[in-house]
Structures are given as structure tokens and as C-alpha cells.
View (cartoon, rainbow, N blue to C red):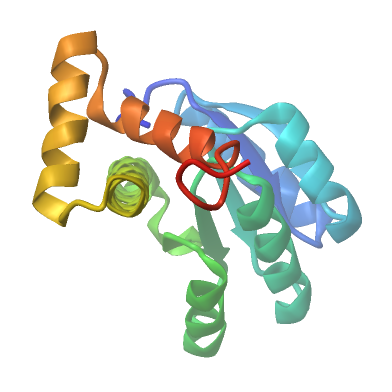
Length: 196
């Protein structure tokens, strides 16, 4: 995922209080964004998140911090977007718990003029986070492919990596794609070299 311009985002807003949703939606729209969903029910928010694919989600703290935390859990579990906690009053205990659940930031009703800056920062950090996750995943895949080649060809780690790199160049394929093919193909190979 790469950083996108943050003009006209698709925003999901969630809160257990309908009156708070009604207050937040116009603020989001005044920033030039589209409110694609307004959710109250924890049981519905995951399906809405999957269906609508928001760019960012704002979860407000209503009467119950456990309700807001459940909303955050469901959205974080399903979303390919960052979640921002929306506070109407200071609540350090809630923020601490929300951070454990995966929120990327929190904003306050008192700082409406700073919402867009906060959203910009969150989207950049979220993109960086996904880029790091991808890099770690590619590294792990390459390491697994090297291990398979080391075992199959009785070679050391450097030779296995050179084998991957050389084949990558010769076939004009990305090294990570070739590593994926080795790992996927390994499942079809017999346990012992030359075995059934």
C-alpha cells in the first residue's frame, strides 16, 4: 500500500450513540470526505467494513468504553484502513486500551481544526506500517526458499541465495516471486530427494 492523497477519503464512522454520529458526519464532510457508513452495532461493523472498504475509520467513545473497544476490534480485524479513536473528553485509560486494539491515533472534538492534519499523519504511518509488513513477509519468504534449496541441494545459505538470485536474473522475475514459487512448489516435492 502506498500513501494516497488525502483529499476526498471514504470514511466509516462508528459510535454507540446516534447523536454523536450525527455530529461527526458533517465535520467529516466539511473536510471534503465522504461518509460511507455510520455504524452503531458491533455485530454489523465488520461486515460493513469488508463491504465498503473505507480509507479510514473514526470510532467515537460513547457511554461505554467496552462498546467502543469492541467496534475497534472488529474494524481492525477486517479493515485495510487505519482506525482513529474520536474522544469527546480526555480518557487516558481508554486510549491506552484502544492502542492495544490497533488504533493509529486519537483526535478530540475540541480540536476539529486539526482533524485533517491528524488524518494525513495517520494515513502516512499506516502506509509505512504496511510497507514494513510487506518487507518482513518478503524477507521471510526468501528465507524459507533458501532453506528449501539448502536442504534439497545440500548447499550453504550463500549458495542458496546465489541460486535464487541467478535464476531471478535469468528468468527476469522478481526474487520474491521466485522464492514464492520455490516455497509453493516445495509442497509438491517428495520428502526425500529422489523419493516418491
